[in-house]
Image (cartoon, rainbow, N blue to C red):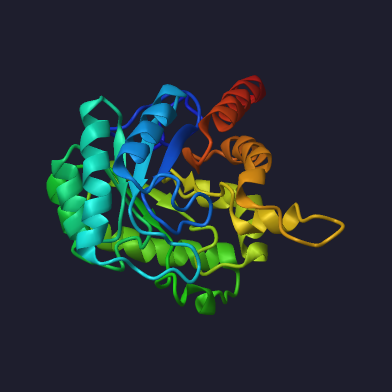
Amino acid sequence: MTHPGRPHAYVDGLPQPDRCLVMGVVNVTPDSFSDGGLWFEPADAITHGLRLAAQGADVVDIGGESTRPGARRPPEEEELRRVLPVVRELAAAGVLVSVDTMRVSVASKALDAGARMVNDVSGGRADPAMFGLVADAGVPMVIMHWRGYSDHMQQQASYGDVVTDVWAELQQQLDAAAAAGVQVDRIAVDPGLGFAKNGDHNWTLLARLDELVAHGYPVLVAASRKSFLGRLLADPATGADRPPDGRDSATHVLSTLIALAGAWCVRVHQVPGSLDAVNVAARWGAEKR
């Protein structure tokens, strides 16, 4: 929770610098929207994870299931095959590893392999046993706002007030986590940009991020390279969305704004620019206090 004299809430068991954290992404998948296939082979994923850590990532998030709109889930055995060697090698090298999974079986084996955090994009809805696992393991957890699997989630993108509705649904999962024994000071929340949300919903959540931060939980935001940025930066001549690898500069700008709004962590594909961004935001914020 919030520490006196510091601008952000913090998660016990994770680094606590006086700035927004930076989480680097390693997608061990053939079909992720931004870099599908680049790190699909374990050796490539390990090399990339080590690079992100060397560039200054506070946490490296390893995921074996694409959650882009329309994606279908891999079998459990395939997700394990993708994730475990990468988690094991990075953890052995001293990298602080988070496992990005909705499956208790994958989370459990990843923790055994050295992961120190669970990032569940379903917020415990896909597998309610996740909260019990996290409670027993005593590790930090990210609870994200989620309304359904990727192959049909955009059909659920209907809200009265998106900020109010997202928080109400997150609160349900926070209550379930507490009932299962998850320690409140080891929980972060994620508004789930792009998950059952259109571009307007994403922009509203970002513009009113301070309202989510005000609830007192550490807030993680994953805006990196997402399609709403591609649409904003569309080619004026053709109308074509800017491709994912052309969205990093916009991502870094957002990282600055997200940090200034009081978020705890940004989850990004390219670390150096966002690390610079959160350091600038921290210095700016220090002058404002």
